[in-house]
Image 1 (cartoon, each protein chain N blue to C red):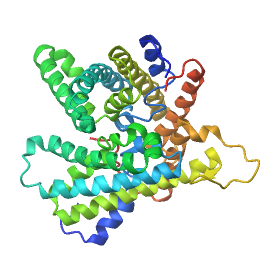
Image 2 (cartoon, rainbow over the protein chains, first blue to last red):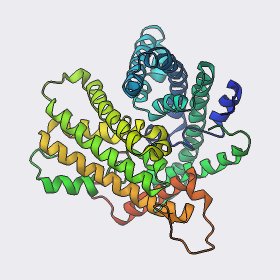
Image 3 (cartoon, rainbow over the protein chains, first blue to last red):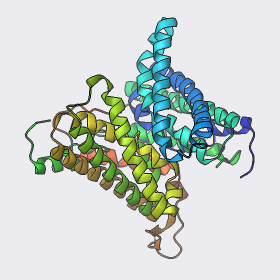
Image 4 (spheres, chains in turn red, cyan):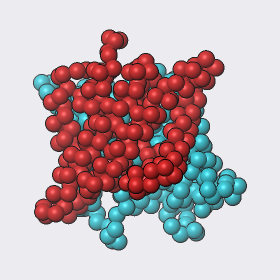
Length: 197
Length: 209
């Protein structure tokens, strides 16, 4: 594998290898939250924060605990526990110390434990053999890419719901998926720039 | 859901009326990611059927011993244990497909269908009914996945299960192999199903937990 520096990985994760648009991760909350821009923003920030921290944490846990003790097969359980406890911790601490922030992010935090993008980022970084810095850059980039996608789709959906008259059955998830497909096509235009695998 | 449902009702509702992908739009992450080849889809389906039915069974057996407050954590751990079994099995017997599926086997854990069924059904129903419900819902999911894969593979690669099916000189549609093709296919499928077979009670629940 070609060694990529952290900056390249960061940009690749946002544009060319967007975790939502090319790897389909994190679609479930995406479909239900992208109804308006405001909540998309809230969830987006929460995802960036949690994804950056948990990817780094999982990297440390994987290489310093699981590999030395030959427990690699248990990585799914361990990762999900790390993610769940981190989210719980963050939720409690911002509720205690930053109440205004809690009002913005609070309801989104529990959702994040089951966001497959977070676990997906952790698994991808292991498969691709990133170093700690690369993994952190990848986590941050994926989070930002995810937020970018949800905001694009959220703002289009808001307009459509207000003005367009859709055929029966197309409203809701169906039209959202088609919009997402179009945005994914737009993002494919970036794919010539950098390739990470 | 009614407590006294017969096995037949459970199957019909899992396969069609409560179809996780088409009706509730759950678990679509993996729906889209693995459907570019029919072979991958079949392996994913088998993994999901196993994990879902066994998790529902276990959650249902343990339902009276699980404290309400930590039930989510318990369910996640149960699901994760079965996923590990599936992952090891696929790695041992189908290494090629294991590489192709990459992280998506592990992502069965966060597949909201499983959590959804454990929460909605297995938690309040006897083991046997939960087991059937798990199989039925997983089959409903599998059938949607297959439907998409059966369109994407011939159009994207010109093959079906690795055999050439399209006529000579057919130019593969690159878009079908890539992400946008998957989004369009699922969008169109949901549109078709919802327009053709509208639900009597209008409200739709979408999104996951």
